[in-house]
Length: 278
Image (cartoon, rainbow, N blue to C red; front, side, top):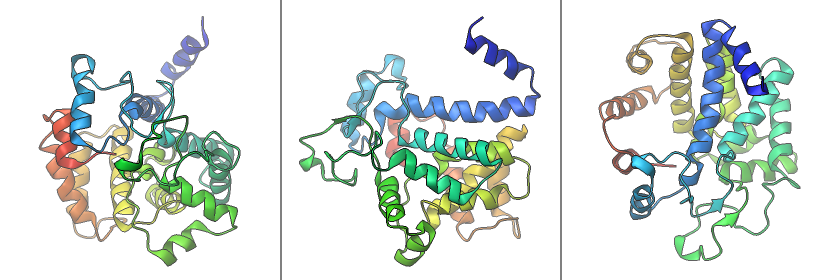
């Protein structure tokens, strides 16, 4: 019997709750690897052309990749998946969220001397298309969230203080992608959202990012706990007066969730055109 079969056997022996916790983390990693060939395809015509070559219209693990900025082997984690792994390792070591340990690990995973420390690229992935003659690069890409964290951490600065002083406008989805291990660990605990917000603020502090991340964590938690209709329940919760861990942007987030939930029949191309892409 191989290692995979042994591991799956151990998972099957766990309670349904713990099985769902493991599935949440593994599912996030598989989804990240499956989607990385289509990362950062901002032009709609380029996205449509890439999807034309997808078998049966399914874009998972697309080959060849359509990412215009970097190419890595199919099945590898993007910077989002690698961020998830860093948080998972920190949680496992510290038996909970520890800001200092987590930040140290982020720097060690994405800082100088790592696969992400490329001097051949611009600091941000948002360069104009006209200047991308040297892209896609072969290898890992340190996106803007990680780029600024690494620079500030190297100077001994606390990222939370830096972001508070500068006013963070970075609404990238890193925060949602990296948090499934924390939600899985603390699902059903009163401090889950508090710890999720702390982990988010280590790298990002945009008001909308924080609000959307907390809503995403609420949804993940309800799926893990086995609730029926998690999205509907969270939309109702965000709209209710006096709900726990309320955020000033909860109403806006609930409205966006409602719009998305009413359009689940859309194709990938139509959905990204209407709701955005990353």
